Image: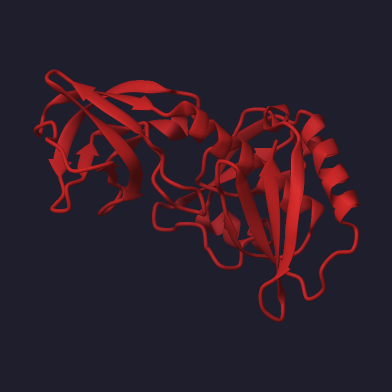
Length: 238
């Protein structure tokens, strides 16, 4: 099992670890990972590993067997041996933009209160797909409302509930296409706001900014028809 360092501190940019294994495809498994693994619409992190006698660029991270995270080198190269001590260095600017976009998309799901059928997070552009037969005709109002919510500088925090508690509160799940991971007995929630001033609360395993003001100004992109019931709303970071 890989310890998920990004879960404890999404702002951690450098950390030591030990190599616990290699995959047959040339990937690396560490005992603790700074790199977020692709999932929930959020891309895996990139960066590099350094060790005594070598360095290697990491293109992305993916989920392996069980709770392992597999780091994928940018190109074939000599890997640190099992047991080696390595230093992980995150490409922070890309990660931080993913964090900003991810939190902004949570708020977009508040401004457009429709079931979410899919989503994708990028460093420049993200999008949510909504179960929405007709495209909204108030695009400027949506953008203005979203930016005003961001400017409220809500705190962003996590909390955990049991699977039974989630079953009793099905409205917390906004995404129709992806169910929260089960089996561990508890579900991670991301809260935007605090107490009575909570703007959003939903299951999520991704990384987020600590305060919504970090998102900065966003712009609404295209609103596209994707099937009879679906509308795709794109979001861009300034």
